[in-house]
Length: 130
Image (cartoon, rainbow, N blue to C red; front, side):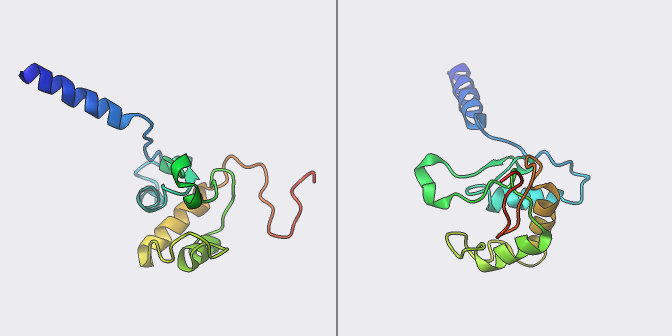
């Protein structure tokens, strides 16, 4: 009986870990707190590998934010998006983090976003090669 309970617990823990990612930013990095907050507050919509996030799933298409692995962002742009519900005013909730937490998330995103991007054109500019 005890063995069966232990086996069931082990199986449920293994299943819970399937597909889950971890924050890969070192705890000694000043951006670690922002990575943790990003993973908690932004993971349902945005992909950013250092935070272990993979964006929305197919069941919730309306909550799909930009893939930040492929998009460079500045600290001020991130703060603008946090305060104003994104750039288009669409789905992102305003003030998903505030105060020092917003600053921490903005610092983390500015430091780690765009690492899989070869270029990040500004609005109104053509992409490289196009």
